[in-house]
Length: 546
Image (cartoon, rainbow, N blue to C red; front, side, top):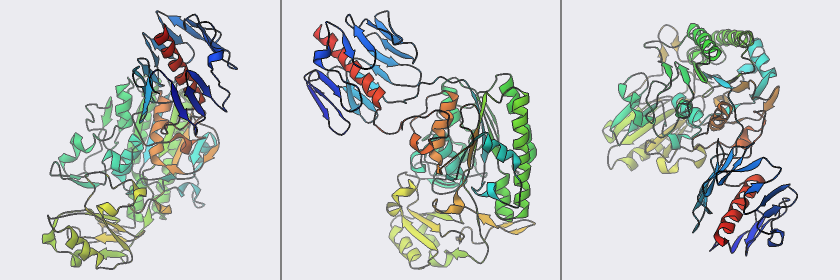
């Protein structure tokens, strides 16, 4: 918009501004100079009218207060000399607008419209989360086991056909992708084991204290931080990362992951019991419970094992009891449940091993981390090309060797400084061993590992689950599979909080919630938002002319 709105044109989106003639074409709205009557403006066909120097809008719930405007039904406020959309919508401050990324501002008149969200539905419902580590997408459909609790939840809620993990399909990267709505290259949690060249530190889960330093986590904002910042109370049980102060914020309560063991079924039962009590006495807004059993039994005994099937049925029994308890506590219409997993699981064995030890010179390598589906290598200075060439010379059809610059765009993994200079990825079902970890993983007392994950996130076996039920969730609905980065925005929505910047898109989760939204991550405003934009500009022009 030049000067005072002489000419703005956008043929594709169907609107233009010329000589103070404002027109949205093809979408019912039309504002033209000939429709400006006296000192008031009218938008035909909508029943909205601004009159008397924009002092009142009749029959629409808008009213003038203290020199500004308030839209009663939708929490829109015009304060002082500008607009503000309260709650979780748009804010316009000043008097003009122009487009800058997700902000819109008109130069020379200084009005800012922040495209925060198109949502303005006030909510005060609770949220109960279950992160079920390693729960593969097709476990629900096994003929050899009965899962009546999960089936009941599906009838009363919504289910995705599958959940696509972020790459790599490992735990910590996907814990954080789910809880931040960001890809790994954005939130920086790029592996279960990481090396940070800026701090010269390693992240080794369950091993070193450095993993609790906030710099590993601060590139993303997990749900509990978003919630706490906006006055919500969050309680998390054995949830990885909840014990870390992230961006200066802690959850209201975090029960740390147990030392020298892992959360058992009894821990899940106790967490559910405490969570229901917290909801009943209104002490918590969101409760998160981490369940590791599917992952532990999938690794140890394999994804097709009878031992895993038994644990799935035990977990299912707790889900059935949970639904009964919610009803007995009069919470069924107040608590939304979301259940999701970080990744799936595939079978492995000692006959499918890729040993890189004989093909690399240890003195050429500064750091090598992890084994299995992925290996990360930081060569010594000047040795990158040599190490890469040595690995490529293996000519192993089950191994992909990538320099950082060659990592595929579709993985959303390349563009973070923690991503290693050389990345090794095994073909699904194969296992990489290294000079640091030269043997196939074996469990004490039960033998070699039978299942693992971390492979290309396009692999079917790497898919996880998403299941939800509650007052804000559609009933008896199955939606197409979607990426796990889209969950964060839904969690924020049912809690009634404004999400932090994220990679999620509403169109990918259409049908899960009882209400639908436009895609907030796009820069395209819907008709209502365009109308608000035009009205704002009109008011600015009127004030300039008075």
